[in-house]
Length: 238
Image (cartoon, rainbow, N blue to C red; front, side, top):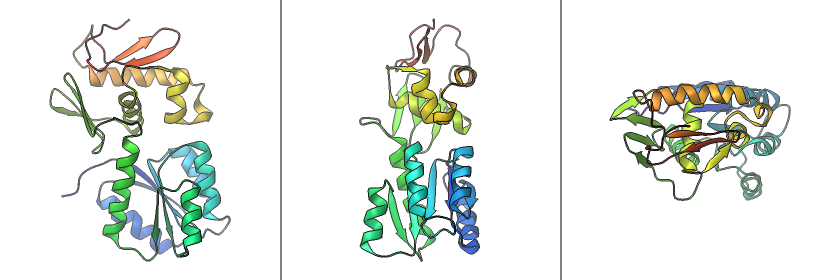
């Protein structure tokens, strides 16, 4: 049985057969998949859905895939695995130098693709040095590799955005994060000023992480600044 990840993957390729095959196989392993067959469509979809990972072909009809990679890197550190028929060392070195996380040469096997996807997501789940795979804060448990959160041993369902917030907080324990420091990596620079949306999401997240608590908080409001994730979970909310 496959492990449910809920991770969202954007597959970019101009070959319909490859798009269908990759989408089907990822879907069977519980990934949520979006597809694009051109560079322009890839960037539009990327900005709209903010995927957890991108599988990127370099031979696109409207622009070189390296340009798509460069544009993504200007926006965020989303892991990118290149899928390409280009086998030269120069192409691989260029892609990796531009920020690709991995390079898989076509044709490739499904199991190898799935393994590369899992590794890229696992590395992205722990962006800061010292962040463990499984983190426990009192009654709260956050499994970074499996993208799972549990309270008192019971798994909590989180939306993709809520998970991104949890990952960000856990990666910066006990540190004050301004609204902008949170909204940019989660929603992107174009949404950086939408503080109200952040407050709504934090309120929802608090209800899920602290379903019975009225006086204790993992996520503390720092008035006029932002939020702080308290690792022991015992500090009173303001």
